[in-house]
Length: 229
Picture 1: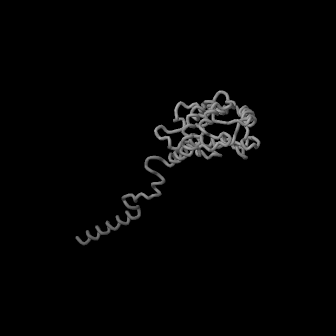
Picture 2: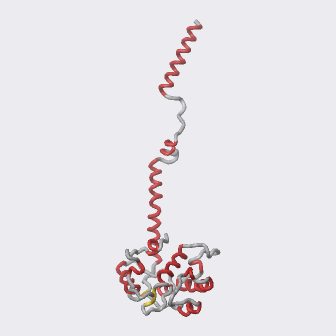
Picture 3: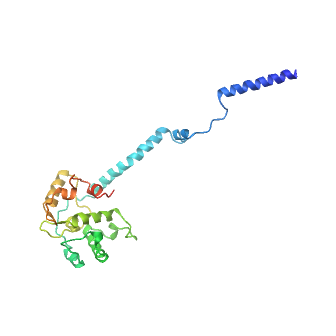
């Protein structure tokens, strides 16, 4: 009798083992890397895709916001070219107005005296218009733009009569000088003021491409000078 019960128990155990093997283990398998990538336990795959799409849209939205900001800051009317008010100051500093050097090549003493003129020409109340407060040597986007404007406008360009062209010749005490809302009006303004009323120090013809390049690039700062927004 005891032997029969042992055989029955053994048979039952074998049957249960076979059943468990067919249906799989009672505990779940360890999570794989693929499982983790498919689902993180907090968001669905669709939600993850939406997040990625939103991240990809950020640069585009930032660019749009920057354009709207520029439109908001634009003057009601574009600023015409005028004779600089700082020619005597530049001469007093010792800058050769016939052959103006690039800004970064000015001796430290001259450069220090030029900075207040830039501040006034752009209508800034303080040096922080371009510089970081407490760390004037720290590079900023506005510092890069100022160098390129000096290099591409102050150095090679002159007034219609051949006189000195300085920052206030275009800015006249304002950071923003162009109203870009009406594209046709802007084109006519730039042709009249920048092409007809300016000349080049090397006596070559003043053309749109003098500033915009052969490809007539409108985003001069970002594309020609490689200064990101």
